[in-house]
Amino acid sequence: MTTVDTLPPPLWGAARMLRSAFPHGIPATAYAPVLALLYDHFSDRHLADLMAHATGKDAARVLNDIHACAGSQPDDAAIRAVREWLDRHGWQAICAED
Image (cartoon, rainbow, N blue to C red; front, side, top):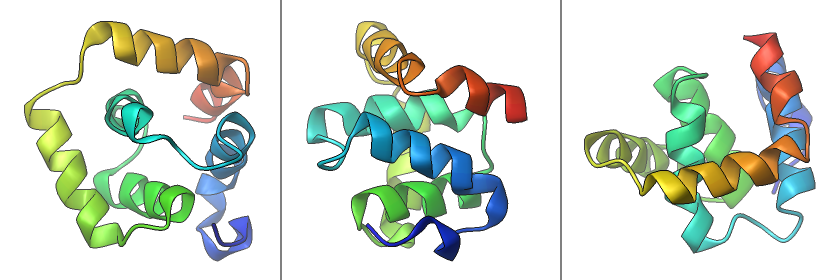
């Protein structure tokens, strides 16, 4: 992960939240649920930049993952579990910034 200040300022809080929630990186099992949860709160480009920052993946690849995820939502239970986890790490404050 690179430093937060390499992202646009509107993404700094979300990047810190993801780093707090997943200090060793976002596990593969949480990746699609995180994308689905964050999808309604960020533009596709900002979400791609944020998740590229959090995962080390190329932003173009993440953008493709976002579109795939939007077409076939992950399981609701998985999204709820990720939301509950992110709630413990500041998700509500990020939503309030919208």
